[in-house]
Amino acid sequence: MDVNSLFGVKGKVVLVTGGAKGLGRMISEGFVRNGAKVYISSRDAAACEAAAAELNKLSSSSSSSGGGSAIALPADLSSESECHRVAAELTRLEPRLHVLVNNSGATWGVAYDDYPDSAWTKLLTLNLARVFTLTQALTPLLTPPKSGSDVTDDPGRIIHIGSIDGIRVPLLPTFAYSASKAGLHHLSRHLAAELGPRGVTSNTLACGPFPSKMMAATLRTMGDEIRAANPMGRIGTPQDAAGACLFLASRAGAFVNGATITLDGGLALMSKM
Image 1 (cartoon, one colour):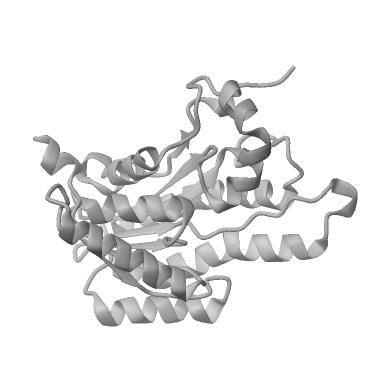
Image 2 (cartoon, rainbow, N blue to C red):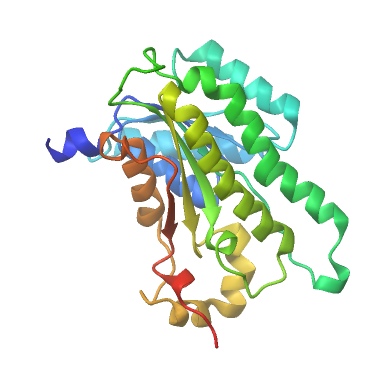
């Protein structure tokens, strides 16, 4: 029961959607540095290729790296057919997918009176519906060789990147985003009940502010206030995002199923009176 065997992910095959930038890039690096084979998928093919090249260079040049690797697998994951194409390609390339990180997502902030219907269509499709589409298509690859009633120490893992804005009411007018993330949290619980008997766990990280493209404008204008409002006095770091995913993907997290873990330093606990 040593640390390496409890928390190790060496040799695991991982798909990180939206894995080229922001939180996804942090998570991808955490897996590569610890010996996993990571497929990076997002709509921006150039960003996928660049991230894979950077991570492979890091892995080969760092003596502390676990010998992992990264492979670009670009796809527009708002498209149903593209989700199925990614699943087919992974099935062709790999005998098993150990970890699926559903991180691709978008936000849309517009004042209530001007909030467009198109925001709902875009965000509910990408942030929620296509998470189900991709997960459903990849379930056979995530399922361990022995499933059904068998107990396994190494279940397939699905990690959804949710948001504390799906738990609390956000201050910003991001109505479709917060609703889609609340839906994602509950979808994860539903999947946990459905897929647990097949040997696949489903959990959610409800993330607070992290340095990313999605959060860049907010952090520029409200960064000091956000940090001051957090009990920990800061925003998230790459180590925080990667560490939580490594736990859920490792033997240490094998019995965690249906959980929504707030990864926010306690920010969601604070209310403004």
